Amino acid sequence: MNRIVLIAGDGILPVEIARKLSEQGTNVFAINLSNCNNTEDLRLYSEKFMSFRTPALGRAIREIKAWGADALIMAGGIHKKMIYFLSSMLFDSVTRKVLRKSLHDDHSLLGAIVSEFESNGVKVIPYWQIIPELLAPKGNLTQRVPSEREMNDVRYGCEILQVTLPCSFGQAIVVADGAVVAIEAMEGTDAMIQRAGNLVKHGVLIKKMKKSQDLRYDLPTTGTRTLENMRNSGLTCLAVEAGRTIILEPQKFFGLAEKYNIAVLGI
Image (cartoon, rainbow, N blue to C red; front, side, top):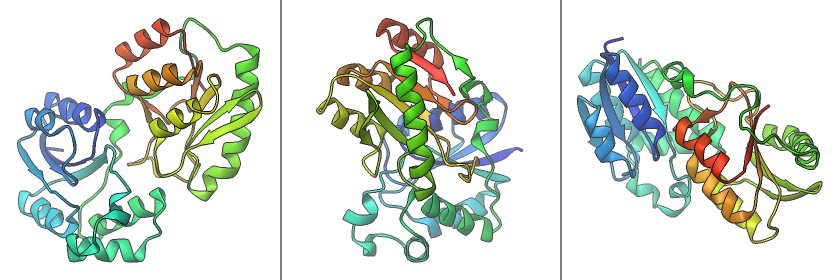
């Protein structure tokens, strides 16, 4: 593919994708839909760049068609609270239509956005195929392996996630000594970790995705910020789903995990 559009949210992930595509000789058109924090880095690897203050799917579709893209990738964090705290009149008519016809859980909302793009002839492709080296492998990923106590909490957390994930919430959970300390909702993983640290100063973090989650655009990610928050909250083990979790900046990530004595496990 010669031309790929990147719908970019917050964080390092869309920048890594743009960089990899650029290195492969693919022309990138980056569209920042919510005035995110990585615009300058995205510009470095993009032939064309646009930034919208509020989501404007109708305008995005028009720009994509005019550019003649082969495909589209969606990656990065979008602050979901904007759906509730911004007036719907700030969105364009296509965005309002998508919001009206979708549930507000992450999976339904992203699925509705993808359907809108594809109904307009824009194919959405999986971004993990661009960066397969960032997928978490299976097994113990750090020198320190989880203790028996930590593994018991990981197993229990996985049992809880089997119940919550089909309900489209609870992609991450903190467990300590067989008790659920915190479970992720709209606030996101980092805020959930901080909330857990206010309750107890030990435990494990488990991140998974539901079986029906679309692998094209909705993989969990983890990175150094997660480890920093875990350390501040006293969490000592991170379990992520192997083959279905992106580990950002892996060299920095694993170096920091060793420094903080945090065990990392691909499950």
